[in-house]
Length: 95
Image (cartoon, rainbow, N blue to C red):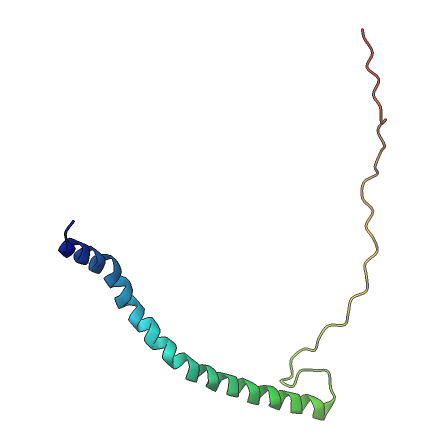
């Protein structure tokens, strides 16, 4: 093969991957700033929720929703079918 065909084959095989990766790389640059903003908002929300729950001392959620269920007691063990022991050694009798 000649150098020209090698370069054409490389461009055909590698080129689309490089072109498709450019938007992905560009979107990842902005992800760090977005992530920092999201983390700040989540931290502020968590601090507000923590302040509300310590003020009230109530176990109910602050938004008026249903509280956590009480822990369930262990159910009694269910009886399964009876197990019959088979003889451990079988006797083979010649007829």
